Image (tube, rainbow, N blue to C red):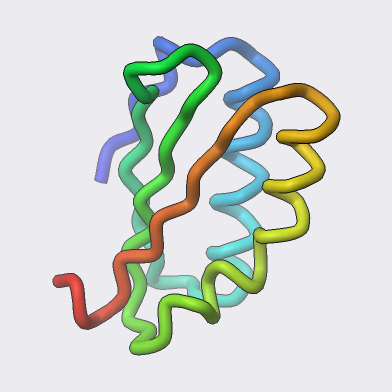
Length: 86
């Protein structure tokens, strides 16, 4: 899936790439769709994998999501789209 980074500032872009790399390290087949939310500072990453348990993906990034929210006030939502969502 294509990446649409034009609407993201450099810091958000770095965070998105970080999350994508973490997920790809565990699920090399993963593809992503990224987009900004309607609210300011809300960003979404749909992570498409062949995993049956969506929590396997969330467990990889959950702590970092909280760190970014607390430190920067930026909400990056990772939405696992495992095999049951394809």
